[in-house]
Image (cartoon, rainbow, N blue to C red):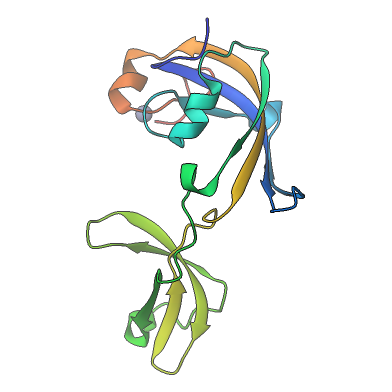
Length: 166
Ligand SMILES: [Zn+2]
């Protein structure tokens, strides 16, 4: 069995960002105990990530790099918005660095990071936290199985064994 559409892939990974000199900074690390399970081909992952692991088998390891334009995009200096202070009447003034759950005009969920708090408005950076980063993955495929009917209907995996949260 190799990784293909409609399979549930369980893998562990180490994710580093790479700077222009090739130096690594650890972003996230998982192991057997907190491995990632996802429904392959359902749009849950970056397309380039799925492309890189296509055809691998359980036990296979692979290292690969995803450039910003193949991942979360370049940093957009214009992706900063000002929210009126009125919005924070109930929650209170957010601190700089706070991550705010927001929605764009099309109803898409996004996260904004507070970059400045002014008298009458809060400035928020809407870039994805991974924007502009070159991502270096070291992955190991731990398990593969066919997705259940229920998982296919839901469009997501129910954990490594298929009995996780819905
Ligand atoms: Zn479900």
